[in-house]
Image (cartoon, rainbow, N blue to C red; front, side, top):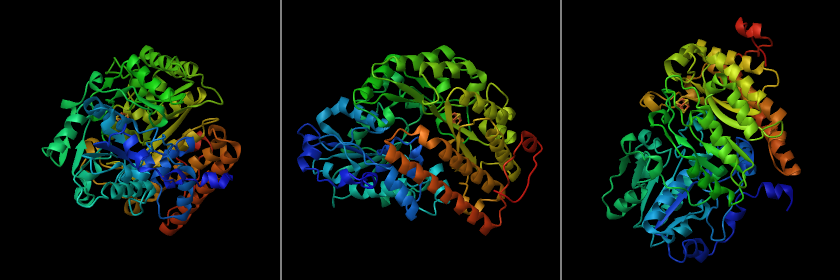
Length: 556
Ligand code: SF4
């Protein structure tokens, strides 16, 4: 196949005819499934294994350039012989597992979202929809769509899925929605009815999914069900996955405890999965050919935390976790989803030891997502609470700079988030975030990216106003966003080719698309700045410039 045909092949599997018997009857072992689980396309594509390309699920659908990028990057999910996706989001696998334990394998199917209608028949009793960003209200989508004035792929593909799921007029089956994006319907409650969603479930229900589905079938389940810490499962109550997961994700712990005010996760109680449990889930992924395991936690450095006062990592436990995963047959790499950088400053040796355990090096970096959120000591104290612990909240900007240097030195590549418009943030606070980016860029051989997000009122700040980028942005916040994207472009230019494992000609197209796309976005930002009369501050060339807050306008 010609390279461009290959790159533009999204939909090639979708468009192929899936025989009815393959898609439904054989899928469920010869019996039509009474429970059908489904999620939208943006959560099933592998984004061609381009590092951090999952962000592309939030780009707007309205622009030709972003449609082209999405078509190139978001390759179709791999399907098994029966038309079911082979790799499935981790949370959906948990629900599947709970249901299978109760009603048997033959009664539970996971549908390909491109052919969901074929899985839903007269015999279906409940369709379970897993979702992350159903209405495009998530922080990344809100940032990429100018506060929701455009439509991100996440929302467009969720709506497309709901149209399919609702396709039978006078349907008897019920539709239940769950997953981390359920909170969107708290802000847009009318959409539940508009989209024909009979029930919405909030909270952790890995162990209760079968009871909930039965109540739905009996007609005794309320339209909105909320589950709190009081009913959250203990690790031994969480069923193990029965199939491979996206990015070979395996969960190692839940909860955090650092207390950032905008975060839902910190409201959950901390729990840790034991090593043998984790090994079984790793094996479920390696059996399907995965060799690089993504360890999911909200802060990997808090695994089996003992000292809640200082939040200093339990070094033996964290290293033991990585070693155990690397010791499993077929595993060549293990990396975390999230971690807080203060741990790197607290215990730099731990970072180096993990690098040795996973055999990191110039050609094998460890990716980690981490929140900077703000470069302001005041915002750190008021909103980030214990993110800097064991250090004082006011030390946060210094910790971020030092941690970046430690991480980079040990072949860790942080993907940082920055939040624009946190409650109480002033333009001066935002300029301090620009100063922080300046300082990080002055680290020799630095490697990191920064994704500017807009404040979304969740966690204990639920009920506060969203930060509307389109109407509330000012010169300071604009400069934060500009500098963050400018740095992303620098990394695309310097590192994308080296860090993406793809065949050469395809890699060339992906890198070229990234470079062009990045420049296109920066060009748009320059135009936007001119229109709004915002000046763009020149990056500092020396630490003295940063520390002296020497500002020179205009430039860039
Ligand atoms: S450190 Fe991360 S996971 Fe923990 S409370 Fe803060 S934002 Fe949430």
